[in-house]
Image (cartoon, rainbow, N blue to C red):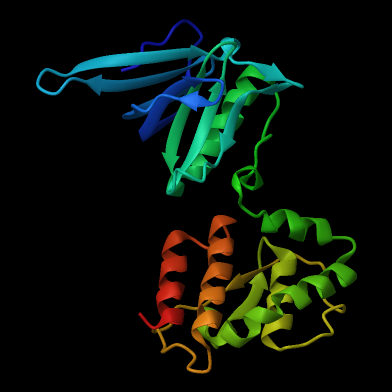
Length: 259
């Protein structure tokens, strides 16, 4: 339980967050697991210690004690190569650092923690993006194409050509383009599926790719193992960018690999 002060409200909470403390980039070997709470004034982390008789320990970090650099709160999202399956949120204070590790599947929530804390402390909204932790913002690329659609669509269509051999297996033969939110993606995929180099006539209207639910088909026997791996990697990029859900990614991965 987090006891709130006057005018204090809870902004976000997360379970199963791993905590370590350190200094100058060197963190303790010991770690703890517990819930993390963000309010408009502080970060509160609670964990249990002891084997037989457990007691609760609480760490509180005032947002005002976290460094600010060039108008940005130094509560920074990051990815550490040695921590496979996790993304980290590091709070930099004057003489101490706190690291909170989130499971990879919770990376969007971790970004929300960083952005909400930054907004509460500095007033700056949505500063951190998926690109700051190694992801790709496909929607940003697509939005940038509006207004100069013809040349950009042509370039994206060329980039999407490697998807053409797997379009039938990944999207399904009944895939269609409908009115929706991610405009240029539909034109790009259509160009890739049809192997059409002339994508410049596509209008920059808002469209989204919608695949109808079908029974899982056998993988394309013409695809080599390397092509299957490359296809799965491209799907993972779409998943990381929020275009596909985790469930959709796993289903299509099994379909491609014939699992």
